[in-house]
Image 1 (tube, one colour):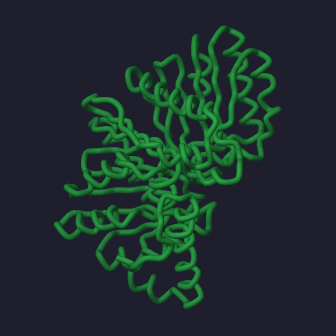
Image 2: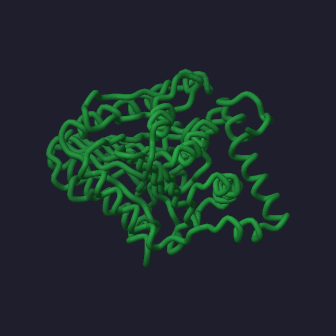
Image 3: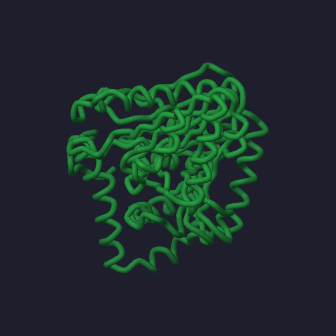
Length: 359
């Protein structure tokens, strides 16, 4: 990412959920300042909640040099739930980096000996240019004064590009058609081999159903989930689903060495890379970005990444797991599931019923 910034000549767009005031953060800021000084147009946008610990004054050197900075959805009562969770860098409309990586010290490492496990992808050419357009949409939305929740509720997920080998999926809050969720579910509906690495796993009922149907028709589903998590509530909610998923013969592993923050979905010959987890917040509330790719080389690399992570993961045995759960642990898991699957969407206004029957 730093090399791309240092090579950029006319434009840089940076969109992040978390940006920490740290030596790494200063290194990126200084590179952006240098880009402005050599004539590039630089725009930086951070989510106001994800980067709440970062003072606006951090960007004074960039603004003084002629760059632009803005917060996405400044913290205000009534709309705090809606966050921009995308992580994207676009340089000169020719190079883009997207994935799950934020700019903070915990992402600096190999995910085994040091740092959280996370992924990002570098793209060139037309895909980079279209990702630049996706950034522009977020930038324009952030510049518009929001009436409390109303504008967010009208936001629609959308898909861009008709290119044969990739498709950009932009998710967001609202009651409308959601390309991101429906594309995932559509691919799963015909899948035979599914491999998923996911930091926060609490999928919709439909996606859960499609995952179990893969196994019913003779396919395989392998999940690498968080053995260590920065959000214990999310981990507990995910573990509430283990017994049901294991009973339906899905294979679950937990990644052990470091905190898992990665998102990588391989569905037959389709690879999904981006910021979205398979949880309630990513699929229903946050602004997210996924790129669906059907390139043979990318597929090969994705499978290798999955296999490498598998070497550091522990398989969950159904019988051992069932016997290991105390009543207190089960209660915690039920509580976490209720908070994240029911209360959070209800408070955000994307799901009306607070309590409904389990399916």
